[in-house]
Length: 344
Ligand code: IMP
Image 1 (cartoon, rainbow, N blue to C red):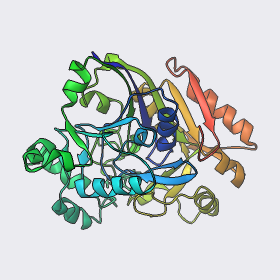
Image 2: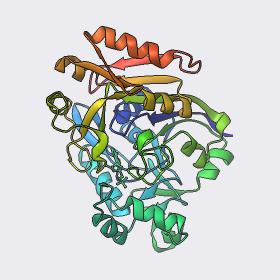
Image 3: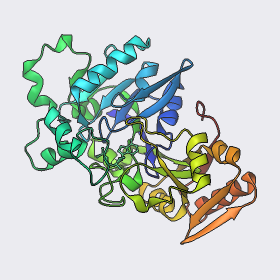
Image 4: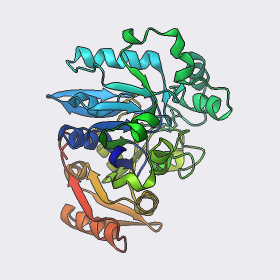
């Protein structure tokens, strides 16, 4: 009871692959009753186009734009001040959020001191949103959860509701169709990413189960990648930043952070890493975004088994990638190339 099924969106690279667009389109289509955010916090930045306007959400699950309930799950950390600002901005942009933003009572709270501590980070190149320190408090068992704050509030005056996600998912008589919206990506996962240049949460499908969704409820796993790769942070071995083609891709693809405005470093798609992400997440459908950017730049390369392979034409590049990704991967049934910032 409570769950009809859950579909999951996971990023199979280093974040910024266009998950927000996919989540937005799926939620808009009326396929889901709930969009659940299962990891991270205000470090995320999901850019979507809504009624012709560009909107960036950080903590609010994207379905709220379409009247779909957004739940911030126990795997997330929440900065309440920033959440309230974000809700206000959405309201000013004409989005009705009334009764639509729910936070599980187990989610941990990000305080100003977490943000201050993170502000001193020079090692990882974080988004300085206090995420690492907040998860340190959580796992050090000194954190404060939403339920610990609740008694201070007049619940009616809050622009969000505190819930018990167990009751929602397992005791509610309704059967909800749930879309789980991931943040960050495989290479930033605390276990599977390029440690220590990672975030402090789990960015793989396993994280969904940690939020109260049993494995058997998961129906589809939508993997999202870009036709090339970007990364923001201090792992300077990621790429050659003086490469002129990468600079062009950065400009044409508008590769600047949605949360921090930092330029994103660019490299060719790392096939071996994407295959790992497909396998570990059990991806059933793969969305490939921003092929149009490579097409506009006119250079098509991949990194595969320590070699760089170049294709003379976009169509050949697409065909090669599709072959590589589907070969021997029985679960991966479908690949969709998306060549517009606004549509799937
Ligand atoms: P943190 O999550 O702010 O601690 O940052 C850790 C690493 O993850 C840094 O390299 C960030 O740039 C990166 N990161 C965090 N959130 C995002 C995101 O939403 N997109 C891309 N990179 C991110």
